[in-house]
Image (cartoon, rainbow, N blue to C red; front, side):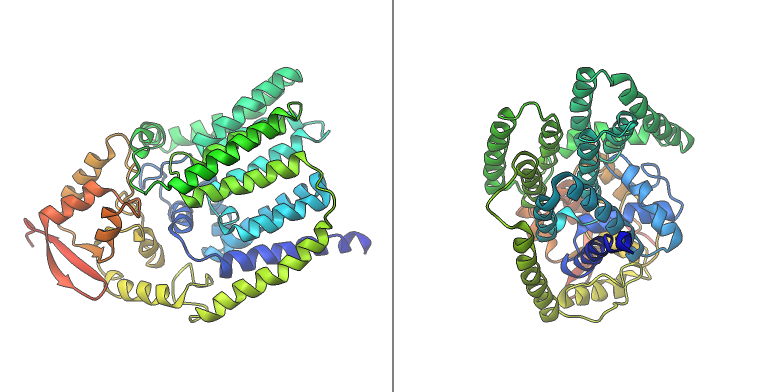
Length: 444
């Protein structure tokens, strides 16, 4: 009975994660895109071959597991919240009460726990740090496996986990075991890409396409860059005073999550990592952390609960797959309005919300669902325009707000594709929210 009592706090944490993700985290496209990739795989589609994504595929493949049991976003939330709860348990084992600081920080910074490859790679980081500090006999092989999974989750960050893994392996004479663990997932993934005949597309989108991605159209936040540089300098100073703790190098490597988008959302991941670095290096005395946590938690629930109440909409909603996700009433009405026009038509929605309408209408994904700059491989803009030319028989829906967002660099949509439509299509229908365009050379 005492053994089960120890589980009660973690059951509470699990429920807290579920509530936060479903109700307090407003729907965002990063969340939709990540779910969309797993949704597409669940539909029998092949990553890179049937639809475009610019990160390595482990997270998307992994998140199809809950969808095989129940094809609904709630299944992903429950599954992912379980993983977050395990990460919280390991964090508590490492840091004791200091782990509550990281838990509170992750709840406040919603993006850190939103199901996505960005947050998952931080979960893998916590698992790696735990193993590095443990005396588990097979830990070196497992560390190799986890570092490989990090690279296979997001290559640009996972590579910076590989460097400290090699360094520690040489220092502790465990390099061969780590490399053994590392190579197993790599071989399996290579085999998967060969079997699905998607290796060339994978190389194009995930590596060659990065040359385009660095020119991403989303606005660069100068404030976020300044804050990032400050945290980076302070972090290097902290690490220089504690060089023997090699787990710090993994944390520092994860700071690359800010690159190359340079926006506030990606900075929030770095804020969490900075908190992790502080907790990893300082004991934090003079504060009753438990009291602080339980004093802040009611305030967190009240503030977010009030926000839900003020923006309350029907619940559950009428959106397939996403019916248990709380969506602000104004946003939900807009989705209903656009979808009423889009659901029975084979049209292109030139917007970053395109994946959303694909999912809720149970349609298959393709290269015209993710229209962001840098998401179509090497010389991706030319490939996108070619795709539009090949599909000129399809009408295009563009939200009225899109022009302002593109001209002011407020989204990631590919500008060249957008201007190609403006120049070569004509408006055939106008509503309060959007325009419908048809190619000037369109013939029935």
